[in-house]
Amino acid sequence: MKTRRAVLLHNIRSTHNVGSIFRSADAAGVERIFLSGYTPRPIDRFGRVRKDIAKTALGAEHALPWKYCSSPAHLIKKLKRNGWRIVGVEQDTRSIDYRRFKQSKKTFFIFGNEIKGISSQLRNACDTLIEIPMHGSKESLNVAVAAGIILFSTHR
Image 1: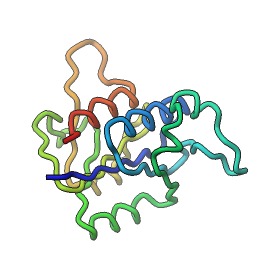
Image 2: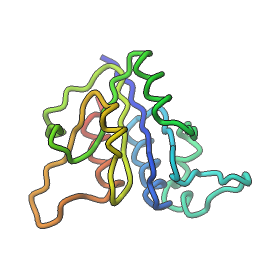
Image 3: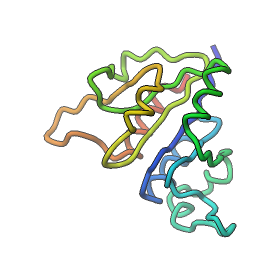
């Protein structure tokens, strides 16, 4: 089964995380990235290239289509109508281990803020929540590292 995958980066603060996710997403075969909230974009509002994103993306920001969306809720509704399964990557009481996740034909992954994660509103809009189990003293991974693990583990 040929799978399709897209990503939403919502309220990511770090340009380096955004660039790293672009690079990993491109390498893992993701077809598109959506940016929302205050997530920095590869091209700023004045049409200038964000060199800090380009530094870590290494050209993936040109190779991988991306779009800014002002309302992730509207985007999610549209994707659901078109048969996409919405999957939040977040530690939550409802989350399942990512290794037990069965991918759909069309999967849309949401990654959130480095500190706060995905908002409860976006979590509630998800069809599924998945998480990466933590075994050490730290409670979470860097969002770019987590995105790399999830996107490569779901590449088919």
